[in-house]
Picture 1 (cartoon, rainbow, N blue to C red):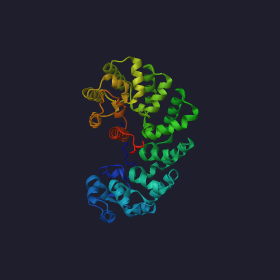
Picture 2: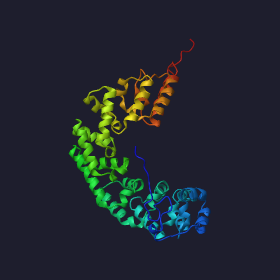
Picture 3: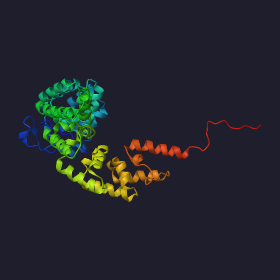
Picture 4: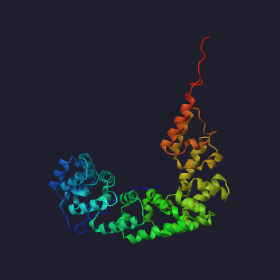
Length: 375
């Protein structure tokens, strides 16, 4: 799975360790802490020890705009607690010039006019907001481009927050990937009327798809076509994989599919049907699949059950074991019942578990039936 890693792109804020002098021409680096910065952070209730431990180099920079950052966030509606939390996690924010911060606020408000929501985004993705002024032009042109696609503002905001690199680079690079995705959708038989919705969903669920080379998508689709998947099935896979198809490569998919087919003893057509039910099968390494197959089989689950409900392979061995034990306590034997009850998120499982518990505790008599009285 993808990890959503946000990194600061600010030229004044892009290093976790103290950057060399040459990369920070607008600041003075001292071997001693900037006491004004330390005092200002302390007055804002920021955990100074945490800053020293993780990003102590920030405290050595001059000039710093600690109070200006706090005032900007406060004017946007951020509480003192939120401000201190943001600066503790991303102290580099104090090194960004006030004028650039105001420009960033105005830019972000073009796609997220609700200040309360914007503060929430900054709290969660501070590195995406406090970026370099050199990226401002690219950010603006990318916003205009995505707006021209009639994408929902929330989708654009999510892209800017969770995948800021895609907005800091030239718009032409995003145009190429978007056109590749649109072309693939059309060539696979997707309906034009649903293109925007399909694209929005894909970008929302995997914002980092924009950062992948378009050639990867084409190669992977050609590989899957050679494996016998029809155009309709490929479109289904592309949609269900939510862009993860760009994380794959033909070699890894070949090994995974060969291992899965040998382990389950199914035909190529049978394997394709299983993959359509559980596309995640394409990107799990052989070692992970081996562990999960072994875990299920050691619990008494048959291979035919796994093939009927392959999505159970998406669960870790630990989660499967835990859920089996909870179900067993309520008299449900997964060895003879459906594996569907094991599937889904924690919330999904708790709902299924609750239904089994209710069924077990339900009284034998009909509570709405009239009671017989004495004659």
